[in-house]
Image (cartoon, rainbow, N blue to C red; front, side, top):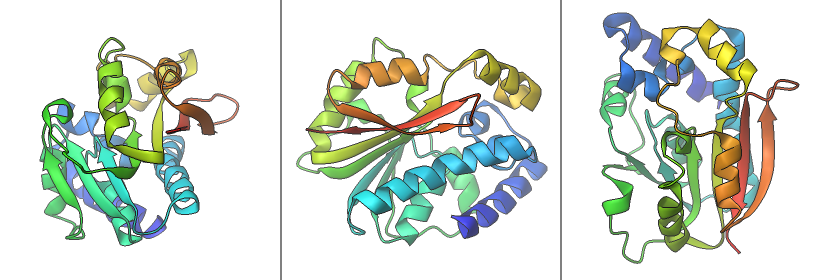
Length: 225
């Protein structure tokens, strides 16, 4: 992950320096991945390294992975470099297109810009589904509809890896300190509420909480049984 971090931080910093940011780029976390604050830097890259380590320890290298809400494709890039088969989906791939002007992605990644709920995956099944800081953008009344479809395309004993903000008081304070790009006004829910919905369908366990003792983010896995 170290090599990926250096490559993407440099590329994102160059992009933001040239054109600044907007709501789409902020939602894709570009300012966070290039932030100079050591705490923000640690949290956003640590999420990726924790999720990557879990995947490497639990599934075979050629496993099929769906990166839901892939954003810049940074996590897809790193997993593809480690031999995994990636289908990477987002409603808006414009942040990815900007990064592609700076970085050559593995050709094995299948990037798709589409609405997950309207897609027909037919018989395609995944060993792992990843949603890193994505599901908090989906309202709680709609989230169960997504989970129904996720359940259909996840293989038996497959893993769903989720990270998201706690939205506690310290987290909200940290957003204010970090700057205007971190308002989070587009968040519909938090990681605790997301986890509660998953428990209706999956076996759920916490992988990691960031950072002790403030617990601003949590990463959990949901296993299909």
